Image (cartoon, rainbow, N blue to C red; front, top):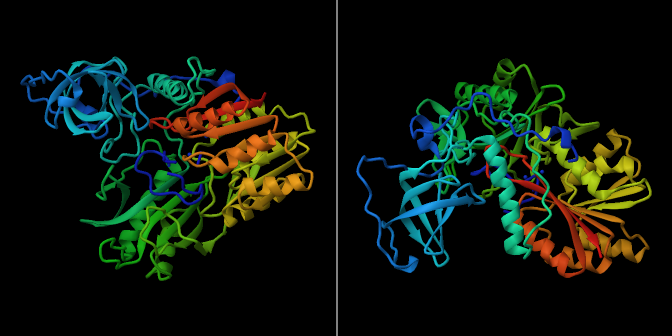
Length: 524
């Protein structure tokens, strides 16, 4: 995937997540689907259930008047309909039907029957909010997060984990039925996480001004209203401690915060990444210009509050854009890269480098990619969206040669360094697009046996798909964080003569609606 956790952005230049994200084996023995041990039954709508994302539950004690409309086309905003929720949508909303027209109800769960007030009418669907529950799902539970819903980072904390996994598997199935025209897509059981909490190794947070000074948080869904983040239930504890240290340091030093409306101030965002290898922390301050007032005092205060600190960097992003990072990064203190491990790989991550947010599940995903590639040591492999080279390096010990392609120069530099760090003499990395390099290499007699693609949410793009169909590598391994674009791209390859062997969903981001999937396509 390219997340959040959590739009087509480069893997190492992502927007602040409004819905999870921020983008991804074969460990069949580890396919567990147990729930968080502290989760409790949600039979009664009480306590934090009102934090279901964007659902304003209005329990007034009086029965809502249900519309008698004979067709969905007669409905208007404010009308109330009864909806039986059938499934979860790609944004975590419940989806049911009224007179054969889809109704999107945020916070509603499969199997629930709700009275829902229409909030928006579209040609192909309705949007609505729950007014009253006629039947609640036995899988509904309390969300442990105090800002669940307003924050928008998670969408499914109110759904028990085993039910989350069923819903995500169904998302993949429905996408292939709808977009690839497959009545029975070959879907394997989803690979769930051993622990669906505390998994994220990185936080990307906007900086705003609160009553007590700078605050760190996420924008509420569909707005620029900043929701301050307390300790986050899906962030690793080290990340939570680091965020709290940064918050305290910013309030102590009083760094001027960038104002989106006036363009004044300096600090826009903070990115915190923790290494699972040694527990060290990398902190990056994203600023509107080169000036970071009080930076020396800020570094001293941060070092005092955070003994695990490994490096402090400044990234300069002068643009008014949802992307977090700009093009220039300066090391202010410490190492310019964070040491990390993934399985047997040793990695060195620059502040902008893409790295999977859930390392434990990443191992399962990459093992699935390895299984799909079916390497014997003689194959030539191309990783079409290689990022910092992690998939390519995962495959390198089992292949004759691996070539990775990435459009972001900084990521290519990281990939080359990671190859040297791991002694992968048969791994080579190139800046540009895969379709360009595949054409160049073909003229020189190089044709891959396996092509791996892990593209942005928007998919591979017609140019790459056309190149793959022209070259027809025997195996095409597609890793995706967007079931819809995965299904559409697979349909293009199926129409061109490929055969879909299997689909392996992997839950990279528990508590969110996102699902990763690995597809194996074989040339017919």
